[in-house]
Structures are given as C-alpha cells and as structure tokens.
Image 1 (cartoon, rainbow, N blue to C red):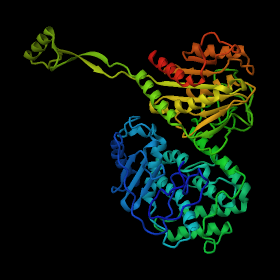
Image 2 (cartoon, rainbow, N blue to C red):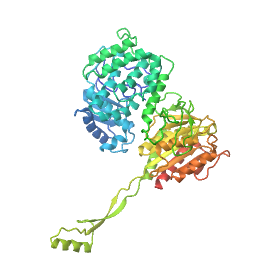
Image 3 (cartoon, rainbow, N blue to C red):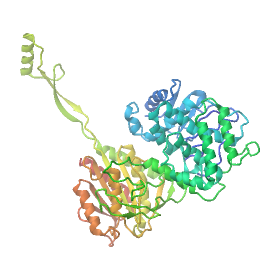
Image 4 (cartoon, rainbow, N blue to C red):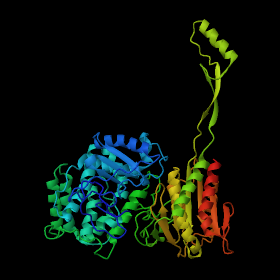
Amino acid sequence: MAPRTPHVHHTTGPTRPTSPSGPAGPGGATSQSSPGGAAAGPPPVPPVRSGWGRWSQAWTRQAHILAGRTDLTVTVAPGAGHGSPACFFPARAAIEVDADLIGDPTVTDPRRPGHKKTVPTAYGALVHEAAHARASHWTSPPGTPPVLTLVADLLEESRAENRQRRSRPRDKQWLRHAVTQIIDTNDAPTDTHFNAAYAAGLLLARVDARILTSADVTKVRAAVTRVLGRPRLRKLRTIWRAALATGDTDGAAMHAHARDWCAVLGIDPDQQPAIPDPNAGTSTRIAEAIAAVLDAIAGRIPSPGPSEPDPPGSPNSPFPSPPPSTRDSGTGHSGSRRSGTGDSGLGHPGASVTVSPIPARWTPRSPRPAEQQAAGQLAALLRRARTREPVRTPIATVVPPGRLNARAAVTAAAQASAGALPTAQPWRRTVQRPAPEPELKIAVLIDVSGTMRAFAPPMSSAAWILAHAAVRVHAASTTIAFGRAVTVLTAPGQRPTHVHDLQATDNAHRFNDAVAVADRLLGLTTPGAARLLVLVSDGLLHGNGIPEAQATLTQLLHAGCAVLVLTPDTDRIHTYPGPTTIRVADPADCAALIGRAAAQALTRR
C-alpha cells in the first residue's frame, strides 16, 4: 500500500506518520483527508488511457446515482487516486479511481448492471467516495491541531458510510468489499493506546454503522480491549456513536467529538497538537488482528446451507481462513488451533482435524517486472484457449438477404393471394453467433515439506502470477500450501499485491485436507467447468498415506477434473497412476507448465 495519503482532498494538511511501508490517512489507502492547513490548488486530472474511457463515463453515471448529485465526474485510470486506490475532490466535484483495482479494462462491461460483481472491491471504493460526496460537507478550519484533524477525519469515515447505507441500503455489500482496500495493517502497526483507538475507530465503529458485523471484528475487539481496557473502549464507543448521528455539515460537532476522543486517551490537543508516532510500541497484536479480519472479509465463502459443510475459517471448520495475502509487512503466517469435523466429498469424510497454530510461513515482497509480464502472458494464453470459433447457424427469414427457396416462395405467394397472412419464410442464410466460453477453475496445491525447499521460491512466484492471470480472464483459482497445516495463500477472485515467498520446512503432509479445502472453494468435483488440480510435490505424502492420496486423486479424475503432478527430477519421488506427471528439472518452469495444462483443460471443453 502507498504511504498514508488523504483521499478527500480539500486542502493540504497534516498526515499521520507511518511505518516505512505503511499507508497514509484514516482507513489506510483510501482515507479521509486532513482538511486543515493552507489552501492548495487541485491536483491535475490523470490522463484517461486507452480502454478506460468507457469506465470513466459509465462510473460517472453511477456516481450521480450513488451520491444523489449530478455534478460529479469520475476518472478511472492507472495511477489515479493520487496515492490512494480512490479519492474525492470536493472543490471540483471529482472522484478518481485507480484502475489497478480493476486490472484489465476488458474484464467486464461497466455499462452492464451486473459488472460490479466482477470488480466488487473497485466498485466498493467508488461507493465509498460517493458516500463522501453525499455526506462529507465540512472542513477543518485553519489552525486546527493535526491530531484533532486526524481523529475528526477518522470519525467521518464510518459516519459517511453510515449515511450512505441509510440512503441506499443495498450499497452496504459494496462498502463491505471496500474495507479490504481502505484499511491496512499499518494503520495500527504497534500496540499503543492511540493505535488501538485508531483501529477501533476504523473497524468497530463500522459495526455500529452496520457495514461490518460483530463477528467480523472479534479478533480486533479482543486485541484493542487488551490494550485499552473495557472502560476506555466503552467511552470511545460512545463518542463514535455520537459522531454517527452528527449532521453532514456540522464540522464543529465533529471536532468536538475528536477533542473528547483525545481526552479519553489523555491527549490535550492544545498542548500536544502533533499526531502520535504510530511506531512507538513494540508488540503487533493489533496489526495481526486487523490482517485476520481483512482476509476473512476478502476471502469469506458464502454461508453453507443446512446440509453443507462449514467453510474454511468458520468457527466449526477444521480449515484455516485465507492468510494475509495483500497486506503483510513482515514474515507472515495464518491460522489458529481448531478441531472439528467436516466432509467435502473428498479425503476422509467426518475425520477430525487439528490445525497447527503455525501454518505455512512466508515473507511478502513486491512482484518483480518479470512476474508482472508473466501474468499478462498467462492471461493472454488462457484467453486464447477459452475463445471458441463462432457457431454457424442456418436460419429462415421472411425478407432478404439470403438464398431464395423456390418452394417456400411459392407457398408465401399462394398464402398472400388467398388473403392469408404469409407464414412461409423463403429466404435462407447462415449467421455466426459467438460460442459460449467455458469456465475455468484451477487449484494449485504446494507441498511445503523440507524436501520441496527448492520449489518454494518459484511456486511462490507462480501463485501470484496465476492469481492475477485468473482474475483477468474471469477464471477462479486458488493456491494452497499444505504441510503440518493447510493454508489458503490466494482465494478465488483475490488479486494479491505482494508475492509471498514460502518457507518449505514442514515434516508432515495434510494433502487430503488441502484437496477438501480446494473442492469447497472451487467445486472441483462438480461437473460443468474446465477443472484442473495441480499438485507440486515429490509424492511422498506420509501424513495421509500414499494409498489414501491415490484414492483422492482417482476420485478427482473420475469426476472429470484434470490432475497434473509436478515432481522434482530425482529418484526419491512417488508417481501416482492416473494423473499426468511431469518431472521438473528447473523449478522455474512450473508456472509455464501450469499455464499450458490450464490451456489444455480449456481446449478439451
């Protein structure tokens, strides 16, 4: 995420200090600005590059509806947002949305009502900015202490979203999606009192605004309570609930709430106007709790029906939630110790599973240019593979063009001469109609045992490449690491901003459990789509036993799911009959091999 930058640009003003890699402004990436300070001219509008013009036009019309005002203009372009995924300029009634949230301008047609389901996070950012355009009609007067400005802007975040939800209840779902972009772990990097209160204002206040649920923020509430204590947290809640009821133009009341907030934290803004250093503490429990909440929101699976198994990450599920995939600033891991039963149709139905407290570990890093290029190339390969030749269909019509059928022409003439309405269709022609494109589902399971150490770096890269390519072509993909635990690295539909360099150090294999999670996420055993499971392992799956693993793979094959096994080119491997097995001398070839296998799965449909 970018350093903390305001996303409602009234004037220049103070911004909160952050950690070196942290975001800026309340709510992380798209945060309410600090409006106090000296006036400054509005930044230039970023150029609308090829392909994004229709997005800007379509979303301008959307913004008029969302904000209830017709003077707004929306620009969707790469680099828009001035350091934030999206921002709002009240002075020129302009909203900017960074096209990186969408990725490919051809991913969907923004003029279609259903397009928002394809880009829910980007559309959520648009709704969030429209909420500010609708409700944020106050500014901080010059000379306002920076800490007061920051807290007032923090309280404005949930207040504006609450107003939007009350005006347009159905926008709640999109505001919920936006939370994963407008909040970041670096909003509260350490466990100081100010950071704990800040996290509460970002997440717990959104529960009272009815954007999030109480269950969503359980971990953050526990971490914040541990730092602040219950009495202080109750006082802060009273303040943010009062802010939710404040009028759209009552800036004086918002600053009064901010002053009360500071008083609860023992801060006198007149004597201590500077914003407290967010990196003053040492422990990072709050940041870890924020990461868990954001990943649960980003990767949450729809609630199962009465007869369906619990989804990964639910309280009764044996499987962990998706780990922090886009917002870690250090070595990461995900999951907690749970036990339970579940049946995905694969593996051992009803088997009790205990998840290790330390699932797969990784170190996040920025994607390299070669990886970004590879994602584009893989997307192009998959797009070509799923494209079908138009279907040629003969049709009969009453009027030309086409070839005249003499018998039908005579019949039509006879009907007309008899005074009847002609029903004959004498003209024949062949038309081309686009063929439906097959759906693609890909699951990549990575063995993170010590014997697969050489494959960890290239497979970490491949996971990022596959996730980005899949989103561009409307495919569903997931990458799962398995060892002592099962860890969902990328959930379907996620576009991770960081590559997670895995550490392969485990000494167990939860293979069947990993397949069960993949089946729940993608429906690998459900007919209809082109399905591919890729196993990257030496095949020596001692934890579940080779016979059980063979039975699981065979079951997948019988269900119509293609299976590709990538193994090291060594003597210490086990080859499973049935799946396609490729010995890989250079682990860097894995991404290309997966791409070709996915393309083949599509061409067979």
